[in-house]
Length: 203
Image 1 (cartoon, rainbow, N blue to C red):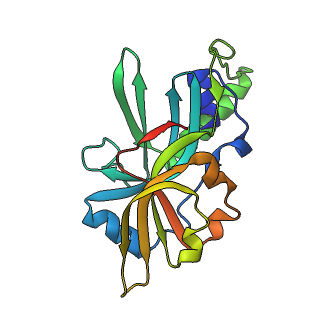
Image 2 (cartoon, rainbow, N blue to C red):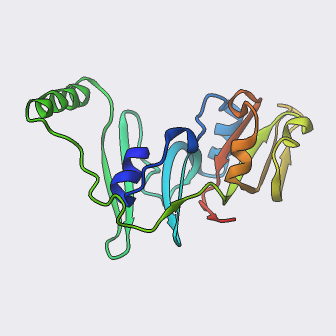
């Protein structure tokens, strides 16, 4: 995502400043809830230009059926690009396996023999600034109210709890900076995902 941001927007952002939350705490409950709502859970890295700000984060997302990302499965990766004049463009290909990996390694070795170096042609050409002061609409699954209290939600518009599993979930709005401020977020008995509306705005 750091490399994409440098190429696409000419802005170099240190890795440690980007919110990066994976799927280590995902549970069968989360997968079931997503399926019941006809969504699929996928880990998505996003680079969003909002006015004169750049918002970057990695977060699981509940992907709806109409999304081009919905049917990207197994060893395939995909990139969805939206330009001012080009509308949406979709690129899909294998991101793992012996042949794609071997091809990438051979390409890198070949490039070194020609003293090839990456160029970031857009660097310092745009007046964008990076920010984590953005508001996201998220799904949060948790097991007890003490965990929920660690999340500084701006508003909550959906609540659900199950006696059988002991799990609860809420849907609501929270600042990206607030998520980053939660100590040891990846170790909590909880799971966070972006909602399918992908509603992201500046705080």
